Length: 290
Image (cartoon, rainbow, N blue to C red; front, side):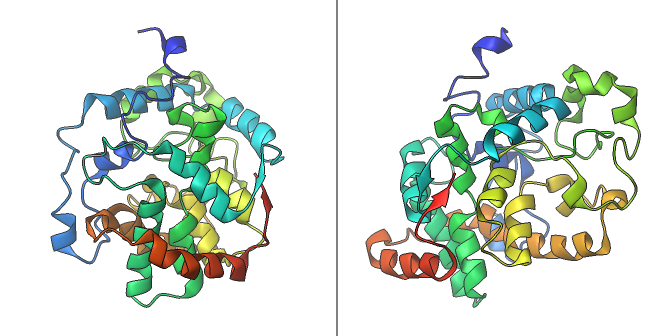
């Protein structure tokens, strides 16, 4: 296969941006076994598209690539738009091939937020559910899927065997750099996740767009909700501060709403729009730089 013909193809290797999440199976932190049971476990029968996605992801997500993307995107000069406009922009990524849902992107965001709201969580957490995937607009800036979604992991240090498909890192040039393949790599022990370079994707991008407006717990949910090796598998504790460990508990609380709210009823977007526009205005200015 010629990778150069794949990495910029918007529709592949997954048929849907959310398909990568199917590889995890039921979350051990979800409180509802009945909700978990509605979703298939792909850990032992993973679709070829998911496998190819992670092959590309693990091959190309190098330390240099991450730093390059941060230089490109963290200046936030791509567009100026409101949170609601970003939701409408993301909605152009609608794909009805997701086996778990036929919802539009806005419907999925509202579905996640409504599940959080129904359980009586604070307004900032409801808002987090609404916006947590907005960084996926990276696909509309012509980024390949492997640089937008997927599990995130530290670069610049040894890869954990708990990362999904760790065998694919053999194709990553960083795997042959001795400095990057010690336990701490370029980092120091307990330096804090804020000092660690994670693989590039929608989590890190959105975190930088909204970091001035939301509480720390919300920002942790946004920044680390795809960091499964840490919040699901308990890896990379040697790089964390005590504060990081505490914040990952909030990520664990959030994760089931992201993955398993798809089994809930379809939200009435028209009826909910005013509530969510008011909620957005409570925390954000009218326009943001993206």
